[in-house]
Amino acid sequence: MILITGIKIPFEESEEQAVKSALKRLDVKKSSVKSAHIFKRSLDLRRGHLAKVYSVIVDTDVNEDKLVRRLNKTEITKLLPVAVLAVKGDKAIAEKPVIVGFGPAGMFCGLILAQNGFNPIIIERGGAMEKRDAVTEHFFKTGELDKNTNVQFGEGGAGTYSDGKLTTRINDQRARLVLDELVKHGAPEEIKVNAKPHVGTDLLKGIVVSIRKEIERLGGTVLFDCKAENLVVKNGVVKGVETEKGIINSETVVIAIGHSARDFYSSIYKNGIDMVSKNFAVGARIEHRQQMINESLYGNLLEKYQLPQGEYTLAQTRNGRGCYTFCMCPGGKVMASASELLGTVTNGMSYHARDGENANAAVVVSVGADDFAGNDPLAGMEFQRMLERKAYEAAGGGYKAPLQLFGDFKEGAVSTKLGNVNPTYNRGFEFCDMNKILPQFVTDEMKAGISEFGRKIRGFDSDDAVLTGVETRTSAPVRIVRNDLLESTNVKGLYPCGEGAGYAGGIMSAAVDGIKVAEKIMEIYKPF
Image (tube, rainbow, N blue to C red; front, side, top):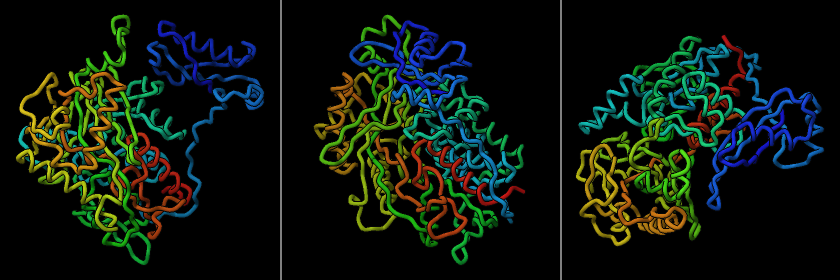
């Protein structure tokens, strides 16, 4: 099959026109074409003109490698097929593989292993979805936090309470396998063709439950409310996982713990597992009226066409430090996302319809080891914790959030009233000065960044834009070091995996990393 990218057509034209354009570029006889269909689609708003941009897959009966070489165009390539995952190992596996964590990485690692007869045991410190929904809703209403079942921990991981964004920068054919599985378990078909696919929190909850039930049907086991406390390691070989309910023996352990499992980070670091500090980013959520974002992005096109909620990705680098938007949620809400007592954490989420009044995104600034005291791999984690506790105390406790309008943030003044944007943070707020919570090197870059972003999206830097703090869980603050076989560099049989181990950033890349780890296990062992 051949992939033709960058096919731009007027917005009013049908997808059929994109397919015709693709076939014309290939310059092959119509009788040689076996099939042609849309692979990806997106909108192009550059220079004030609205167009649709497509990638098209064409299957022919000609020598496609020779055809691609003859055409010699960067936009025409041979499409690599999705790899067929198969067991290649012949070594007997003594105990079932154990996966710590049931977020995207652990879920897809477990699914692939279950599909191939390995009967994995997956342990998750948080509750199953029905319990998780009830416990998190109780927290939103009362401020009574469950440290094991919350927005960060529980069935589906932190990604379940998000926009369900599936956009990724990785170029890995396994991503198509992830999309296929998500659709099989209830996601809309559109995620397979949209350039910026999303599922939405409301749909994602049912999807992860369906995948869990499939894992169980295939012989896997998922243990909820089962917190991993440490690893059992002897003579450089993993022997099992120590949980609050006892030891689960296994010489094949995948740690897909997510970026907030700080107690587990501490335990395995004391146990001698190789870990290093990793860069991440901190800042705050910014909210605008979604209508303002739409008008700025689409202009008078809104009157002519029915367009999706506007979304953006913005970034600038100044003095060697990046400031960028992260996890943008059109028509979404800002979530209370704490997983530790006495610390305030924000995140964003959207439902599939994205029909809320506000748009929100994190505006964050990159931080690294030079910003933390000492060389301790866990110093970044403590830096996050320090900011979260400062935010909690500044807002008066109860997991309320510090809030400040951008105009006052620039002046270092505590806001006294709201403007045109009504905050959506679901534990309430107190007006505070964010300059006294975040380090100056962060606030300086946020001010410069938001002002610059206002040149790209009119109104982004309006004085009444709402800042809600703090955003600290952008990615893992550590990397659990692994080798080319995806094993820990100093513990045989231990597979650090996904975002929590420092090898992914988001639902899609974490799921792909889970599949890669499953493949490595299947290269060594044969199933039961």
